[in-house]
Length: 334
Length: 170
Image 1 (cartoon, one colour):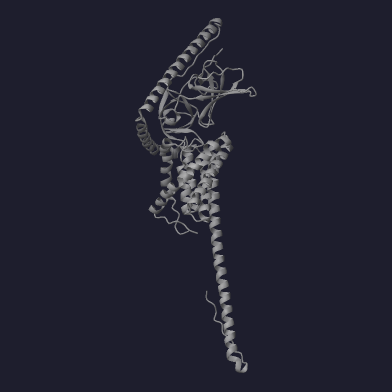
Image 2 (cartoon, each protein chain N blue to C red; image 1 turned 45 degrees about the vertical axis):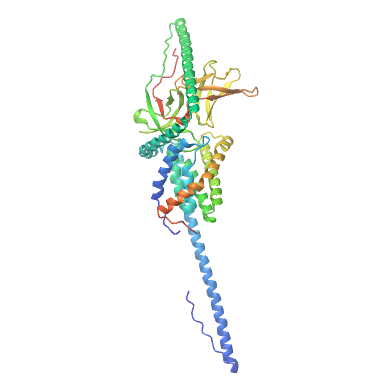
């Protein structure tokens, strides 16, 4: 900052004039320095303050704009209006995602090999597998037996009511094998990303299964991808049926586990009983294996009983799944 | 600010990180929980480069998580944007090379990320069991994230040096 030169005025006071002139000059210089320094500091402070304000304002504006975009996207997603854009972007991601998935699978295989070196563990695994297979065979046999019984009852019903037309329907069997190319990156939601989409006939609401039982349902589908909400997610709800007592309830996920809820107090829930889909509601075919009752929580003060279910499906190691595309709900028409 | 914001860098880096989180990390789960690699990258970048870039990285990272997740789009975008702000504020106001500070910010940002995500999930009509999720997901994951941040921070610092971006200072 340039300050105007200060001219010391000579004071005509006889013999002391020289000393007074010097004193005035020094006082003016000191004053000048003080003003200069004060002005300089103020300007720095002012500059710093305005810079901070501008940056703060800019950050607030950025935050508000990005928040607005995120919340508008959320609102549009709720109205199903964002799906085309989302679908388009994810469609482009699918090849890369598939490549990464293969890499992940290779890592998994390597880890598995290391684990399988332990012979005891391998043996244990084999025996467990065998037990599961036997259990599943038992389940299928029991289901066939139940079906046989029901068909006999229906036949009996038809014989007793010859005027009625009874039409039975079942899973037709058109299904799409799909590869799991990704899992939900969020720890809050349990879902899978599949490499099959609407181009392969996959639609929202279809059931996803493996040979070991029900996996979940399709929640979103686009040209070459679809998302499956797993049974174990806390937002999954499926109508379940106990194989032996034929009691129904709702199978819901909670913290990665499965529970059969809302079973009336009068109904009997036996540990190790098999839970299958009831087919009620028409969203899923009847008889798909969900799991086996592990323990029952029954209290007289509650309106309903609850049971923890163990699924035969290892949800953390799913690679290939089947999407059931066409099925006709079981109906009895008069 | 001593260096210009590079908007292309997160568009290249974050999809790679998101794919890793979706495909490879599920095979390396710790007690059924997986590391929030995208979140940690955003926090780390925000600590190094400040709030503004943290917000941009958070927005892009969150949008990618939303794309790959079955949750409604926008939830993770907003939650991770907030994490960018939190880390940016923390990184700006105190000495950012402090390890304890990074750990503290990561813990706070992780909890904030999950709380906001859960809140938005509930507003969107999804069922959220707050207490159970807090005990079995939020706290363990926040702990896992906090323990992993020194490693991720080192990697992100290397990335930042590799891409020729200067560390920002106030």
